[in-house]
Image (cartoon, rainbow, N blue to C red; front, top):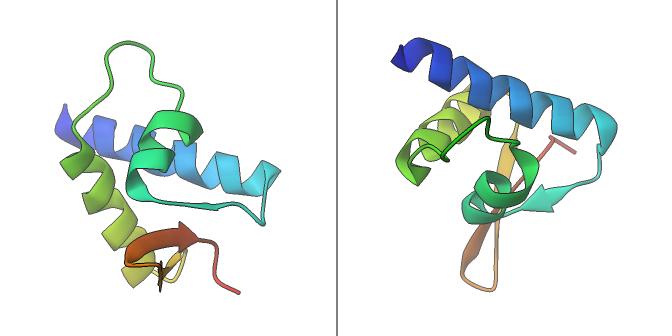
Amino acid sequence: MQAQELEFIRHSIHSYLQARPNSADTAEGIANFWIRWPGEALPLSMVMSVLENMRHAGELESVTVGGRTIWRAPR
């Protein structure tokens, strides 16, 4: 089941950025506003895992702004 949940998160982030390519947010913001959870939200640690995997795959990049990590599509 966890693989399906991780794929749901990845797909949600990818779809959000397809519609809004200039978007950028913290992991918390992504979990709260980019992902339309069908029920209870999954743990932030799962979202972070997907974000890290997407960064390693070149699908996302992270930048530090004001001491916070911001995630966005590669520029």
